[in-house]
Image (cartoon, rainbow, N blue to C red):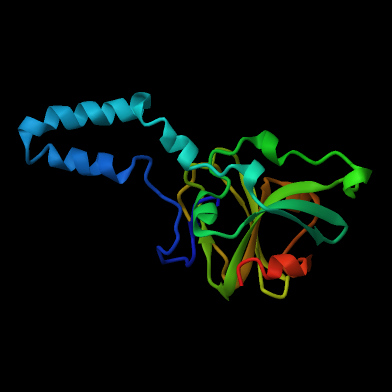
Length: 206
């Protein structure tokens, strides 16, 4: 998400599809009605595109270093995941996250991380429902796994960067795991597999 839609056809808590803020789009419409104000609006819009609104990018990207983390397990693989539990975190997801952020984690006995540990983001919702994600403003390809409340994976996809088509869960899901593209296939993780989710995560958005 990541570019989240909580339902395949709904708009609740969706990640923004537009490349431009609403104020810019409104401004462009205004120029049709008020020519005296039009030049000023267009200049301000151009200024935003050239960098006056440079905070827009940081506002639409999660600060991964400040997010809560947890460890989940699928088969023999441990994932250290950032937890997206708030609407804001879920809306931003992995937008504008570089590929290096999802690189495999080196083994670290001091932290209890075995060889082969992986990174990802786990979206934690309070209930099960049909969900769909898209890839607006997400610059790297991602794998996604929709997970029921009992930890069973119901659907997986590999999602292309910057794509605005939706990838639906097909079945109700409470959790969503995003990780680097191709990893789920490499690890042979598929629908029907069990994800071990700690109790602390189960309570994270309950």
